[in-house]
Structure formats: C-alpha cells, structure tokens
Image (cartoon, rainbow, N blue to C red; front, side, top):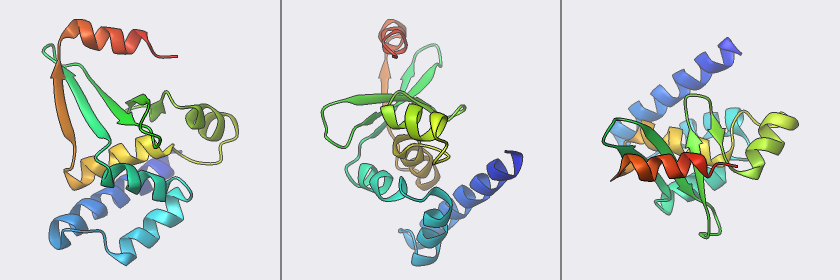
Length: 136
C-alpha cells in the first residue's frame, strides 16, 4: 500500500506541474491517470468540469469536502486523508470488491487540489457538525 501511495502522490504532483505549465492536462498525464485510476477517471473529470467539488471549512479549522453527485441531486461528503466517501461506490467498489483505489468523488477532489480548482465555503461549526452527523 505504501508504494501505491507514493505513486499516487507523485502522479498528483505531476498533474499540478503540468496543469500549472499548460493550463490543461496533457494527453500524456491523462494516459497515466487512466492507467492508475481506471474507470473513475472520466466521471471525476466531469465532476471537475461541472464545478461539483467544494471544500467546506468551519471557523475552528475543521474541513470536509462535499461533491455534488453526477445526477446533481445529492451531496457526498469526503475525507481525503482516509480516501473516505459517503457514496455507495466507495463502499462497494473500493472497500468490498477492491476494484478501484478511490471513488470518482475523492479522485475529483484530489485532482481539484492538484490543479488549484477547489471552491471553498465557510460554514458554522454547528453546520459542519450536522454534515458529519448525517454521514451514513
């Protein structure tokens, strides 16, 4: 698992560099991303294009990420430190079947962070507590 973490960290550093230099992801970096992340990559890129990723912060410094689902009707709450997402694909395809290393929502967050495309929203501590309590 440590090697996988190193590979994904290096890849995100390369995404950051390429995006800063070119203002877009090159075919070469997209190919590398596809190789590592597979099926979740294209839906993650669509989430980014739709500006669906938001970093939620509270005055006490706590943070979570929220991603609007592809259908646009539901928010998924994510914690990138553990690659956790409240979506069904995380539980089934990442944890249970181990088909992918992360769901499209967490991948979209990681890519947004690397490309500096995160929207931010500051809310009260109580509102953030409610978001965390509502996790399934």
